[in-house]
Image (tube, rainbow, N blue to C red):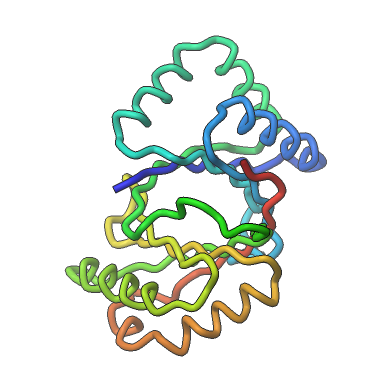
Length: 206
């Protein structure tokens, strides 16, 4: 398995551009594979302001992730940088996730994903494993240039599964979603509630 870490920053009013630039600089400073995305279509427009989401990845083991977290928490320069970003936000948090499918290792030549769609699914009690298996089977038949990434956060609801899709455009992501819907099979029977999808634009990747 491999792992990644998301930072979710909810900018204070009028601070979105400042948070975005600071987050980009922070991801660059870490020096690992990652990206920064801003929402273009949120899952629920009636809730609080949407988050700017950054991702730090490439962790093959939890020990690697432990080392980065401990080094960051014990480094005053890193903590000052994170605190400065947090000061621009209404709230900020991080989430560690495990990739349940094959990870994305490389991109085809000339392919530059600009859109990421994250769909959150909640399994019915005792049907998590069945749901994951069904999602992995659906993934295997995907015709997308980059196959979806199936993952689960280490903390939070144990039945919550995330499916992330990458695309070059909004039209591309819509076509991927249409293909996924056509291959749902028995997945809806395994869900405790309707899935929630968030579509974001990738503003930086490395």
